[in-house]
Image 1 (cartoon, helix red, strand yellow):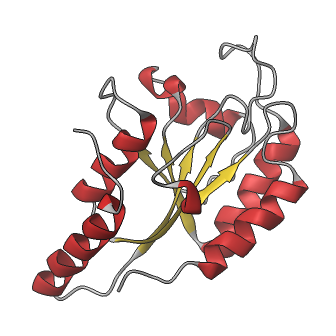
Image 2 (cartoon, one colour):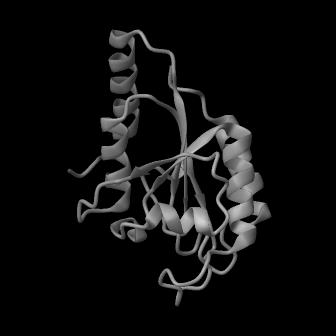
Amino acid sequence: MLFKKNKIDQILKLNKKKRLKELSDSLDTIVFLDYDGAINLDLNNFGDKKFDINCINNLNRFCLKYNARIVVISSWRKYSNYKELLYNSGLDKRIIIDGKTKHMETAREDEVCDYLLEHPYIGKFIIIDDGKFNLLNKYQVQTITKYGFNDEKYDEACILIESIKENK
């Protein structure tokens, strides 16, 4: 399923209609998280080491401040221990990892859109990834592989999430 321009607005409107039918106001804030280039700065690390502690600390600060849950979009999501890797690297145990996007063999952006369609209770979301998103770029904090989710990107994420209107 390839998503076209303005499709994200259609998805958010559809999700709003679904929620109205179910009379629910409970909305989640989600961080769609990549590992490599965002919290894993050692690209030779294939799970035998921990992720960058400064990037993990910034992720902790962000998720706790905004009561955000994590959905993993990294290729590491294919491994059964993708959640354990985060927690063992210092992710605060109070932060919920909601799961992962489906591997659709399309653009990662399509996988995020598909996840949004299947989960109508998302009010706000951001994407932390060093790859480039097109359709969803206004929701992305694009990290630089060498520095990851550093203090500058943490500040950028805070500004971004506060600027997004909740899809009620």
